Length: 118
Image (cartoon, rainbow, N blue to C red; front, side, top):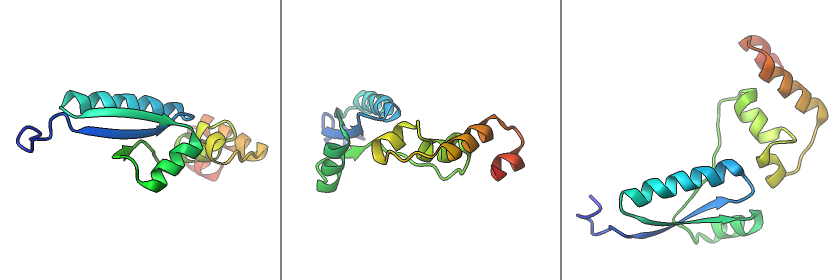
């Protein structure tokens, strides 16, 4: 399809936030996958402010980001609000010891009703 569209070798700029390990790792995987089918992908890991500015200005073809709507302590709550989460440290720096304690307890709990309660 890329050959038919005369798009083999098309350069693509892929952004990721260098401060979030998961984003860097996924960026490398996506870069390799897209290069293997014929694109020419440059992965650009940027610190938070340059990353946000580049996104606002639209100076990219794709970016690695993420979100989950599975409200579970191992996903959404741990990733988005726990004080030691890479994402929290990069985006807000919010900290709450009681919150962290509840999420950690919920992660250790197998009972889905109790997890939800916590």
